[in-house]
Image (cartoon, rainbow, N blue to C red; front, side, top):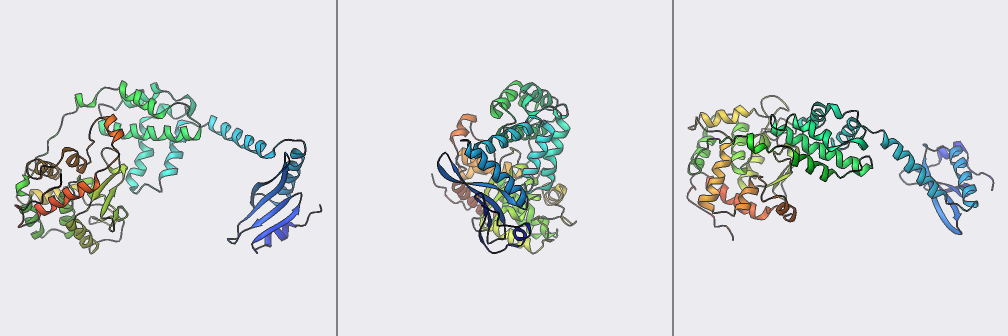
Length: 405
């Protein structure tokens, strides 16, 4: 069949439809304006449609050449679709064979950076891997071994335990991506479990630092004092939000509006900003929602909920500490409010252990128990946080909301 299309015609066609050229070759024009090539063939006696690529990536002359070759292959009794797939797979394998650890780290970073909400932690993902796995940089992914990962982590496992834990999680993520690409043939989970099992326990050398806390009985009085200070509104709101959510200071100071779901009344803290490197959902109380609406009055237009005095920069950690120390509790720390909440859970609310611990974003149970327990107990935690908010509201310190069993 004679060719019916011309290069100029292909370039100017805009009406949606199918335009035949010969040898079963057709140009598909969609309503969006996108164009692609398709060929109708008889393969093993069955009529099949085969995609040849998008225009203009594949020109008219290229499409005709591919169509002629496909027709010849089909006439010989072979399946041109299988041959095309094999060629794609071979090219993929050849590309993967040369993929190094450094290239894989960059690929994972580039793939995820737009979904990570915190710019600081996005940068830390790639910089920490470059800093702490330099000897692995040029190693092909297929040659990555447990020994190399162990050697890299052992240098910081006891000296920088928190950094080491984050690097551990990031290495696991790169291995999982490489496994999905076919560039790493081992098991990411088995590899990292073996490495962790070989490393010394961080608990042996880590000293638990107890932060002096405001007694839970005095928190309501402090909140009342806090509201009456002449401090910047954003500073006061941030500290009260920390108290109400029993959160770590950094989790609140770097909180972004995109993490808030007003309809669901939740605040979702991404894993990059959590100590346990696991996403945490905080149920928001009535007063927490009020604080967020008040915070909107003082926004600097950036992504931060509680910005500092400089545009787009978070509050300083020292700001909240100064507010606490200058208003009746000179020896206490902001982090100590988490202890105040935990003591209240034990002494007043008599909350279930797992509910109280999950409210603090602590891991509950051993690895096996966590594997079988997929619930985040959100509604039970919401009830507990509502009771805490009621307890610390000024003039209501003695009122306790009964929790369901």
